[in-house]
Image (tube, rainbow, N blue to C red; front, side, top):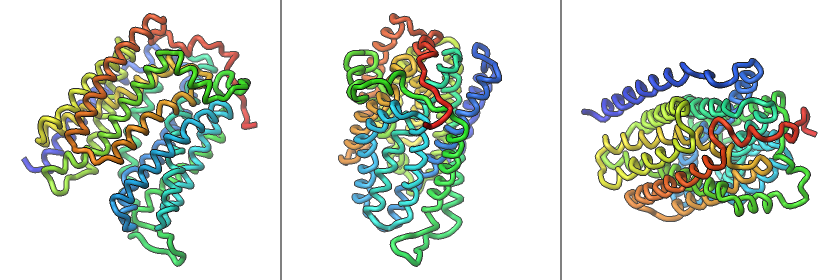
Length: 458
């Protein structure tokens, strides 16, 4: 079997399975959730803006390394640039999360668009420190992306009085659609990069065309997203956070310290998402071991199809299984999948194992989003979400700064996921005995009158 036929057959098989799961999942959509026009309008409005924001992020991913390399920077210099981005996310992320809770999640989402836009502008400069500034801005923006949008949706959903059980459907659509955004963004980015070669301007060190074009396209989506957020979203805040005299970060840390459920959730998030980033850094050399030039874009598309299948599988399983119980199996299966490259380097079993892990990622995002909505208190939600990203980014920095062998990296991943499975099992029992079943979300018990909402940014 040739390399092209191998990856083609795997993509076809993955697409068939994903298509079947999607049909089954969407066939029963809204069976047990509100069908009011108000809820549907809210869901569509949120998802539209979320997809625009995620597309802007996905447009940048495939070409960051390639752009730095085209400017002539060494592999070590590029690694340090990446460290700058993850380090900024780790250091500043907690502060911007606290800001979101106190100053407003809508403002935080607008700030994401602004910071990421400025980061895109810096990509046109063949200057190391300008590019480092862009990495720092991008790191802070990423922290806002992965906390403020979700926090805004959860608070708004609750404040409008929608049923807690409907939130799982929104989470499923978020991450199912996110996979589609990734595939479409990859195609758009490749087309944009091919339009014109990288060309210097009359004002060094600025360039245009080539690998800078995907970032220009991302900037366009960020402008659109900023406009949509400004015109279509209300402002909301962490419950009571504007009235607290104490430091928001200290308050959030105190919650993590005294609530074992919040702490365990943070451990699980750091372990799984840390493994996810390790996987991102290592799947390319794993596949490249036997091929000089694998079709990486094709493989990436296959991964995204598997991730979509995982999101649809979540919708199917959630009808009979609580998300917190579902995650125990997800982590156990993921642990076995990422152990496969430790024992064999053969392309087919490794590729299949990676697809299984991507399906686990597809289940994880909506399931963990639902669990966090139950466990993390509304008053400091965005702050705590960003606190979770501190150890996560620490794991990523450790990987970037140490030249790990592939087998060592995947061994660490497998063990981390095994620990996550055990921790999740403990958390599941705690959620069950506290009465927070999936149909009776903790958020649903928040008094609507306590939600801080306004129709302006003032």
